[in-house]
Length: 78
Length: 247
Image (cartoon, rainbow over all chains, first blue to last red; front, side):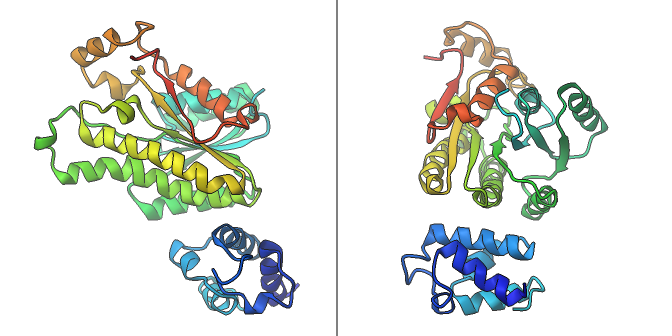
């Protein structure tokens, strides 16, 4: 599985959305991505890429696209 | 056994109530990451002895809770074992000699809060993210009766009051993730920390204790083991006093 597929899957699984919905997601703009869903998503991303995210990055991860940028700090290229 | 197969992280594990908790949890079948402030052969030897006695693994971790980077590094090390975390016990705490509020520098108060409150909260943030992956977990915070009734030193009792408040708020916030959060409020327990308080404080406290004696560390640890276990699966947001009946 590519990093892109792992990343996409993390959103789909953690936030219980369809694959088509995932790329448009923004934190707080849908019922799927609330604060509880956010922490589930972080756990899914940490598991998928074997990383431990810093608190500032957890707070900054506010959209599908922003997440890709943040993961680069952890040497994960999506 | 109450905790067979569970994995726990206990802070302040080298002595006092924390050391008793490591032993009580191991005796009940739990594996433990035992976090202490600094490396010690005596500590590691004690863990090794208990591993043999109880047939579990007990791994030392080291971090000064006033150092956020060290706390994060310790959690990273534990997570590298690729095992779930079922239980966090925020036991580590410091107390200082009695001193009137008006003679206590704000910096001294901050140092008490840095360990007793902020250190515990940082660990809880990291540990509950770990627990949430499995959708279950139990956090036990060590408060104190001083956090309920006030104490002889404001910063210590206020830090424990903060722990009690945090316990209830965290219980509310983490329940959807399957994580229970409770606190224990020990009374006068026989430890190095309480011994330093002196005879007068001891006698005054005993006069208000129905059972008429100082508590033992293993008596606090036994309640913690129960609260951490699945037998307490419907208990959250509670503060349980282990104080011999202090009225």
